Length: 333
Image (cartoon, rainbow, N blue to C red; front, side):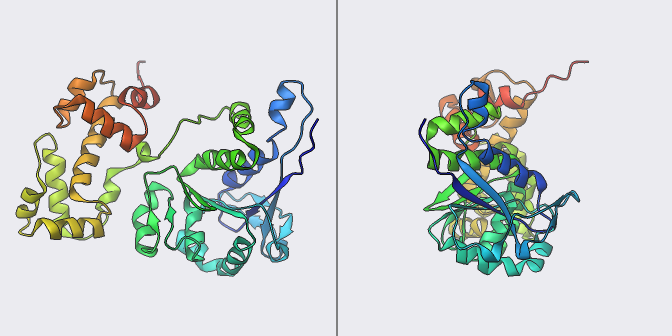
């Protein structure tokens, strides 16, 4: 049997973290090379050594009031293979303010030729440390506006489940750490081991983005009345053939200005907003049991079902049929 020297994974701990994002990641890395082997009566070979590191090695209290003991003081870590920042479960602003002392250690360790990764709102800590400047990143879709406002220098890709810029990785909301851990396990141990871990933990590995979980109302959390007027017009008339030039005339501005202001306040162009509204409506219809792609396309403003299906998959990562299978619930009592 070949010998594998385990890679080191360091998970950063702090008060207010989401406990499951810490313990879940620890389990996935710790059981790589173990669970699958046990199920198949093979000798286990642990592929990662995982530790929780905190300031001064003190215990942390997670957002669910679970206390976790640290294995290491982050001050003592000079190098690691993977540095992982878990989800912020509490107030973003409070955690960033109370844990500023972590930031120089994140920078220092990231310079030791390691992979750096964040899950969900953990991206705020990476961005605050300056480690996402000029890079693609993602976070929970619910924090998109706040993140874009706080860190305009980061190239936010909110629809993506995972982003990767060199050796810096970010995962989207909630249990996206599953996808993040599998990506890193594959990076270090190969696809076979990553697939083994996915099967052992019964994880769906076919998610490519998180837009299937977004809420369109979050795109209106600004105070620009003329932009809201355009948004509401689109929401009321998405079945019609809409032109950006006509939307601009609606609020007495130019197409160029409207495009610029939409990018500033909604973080997308007007044409992308039209597409987003149509896809959102299609998702609602599919969730309620709509069956036919052709009629679905017509109901949301597209005459070409193939073009609609292509747009839908680009937006959600799923075909309309796959989306219905995943999200439709039959409430028969």
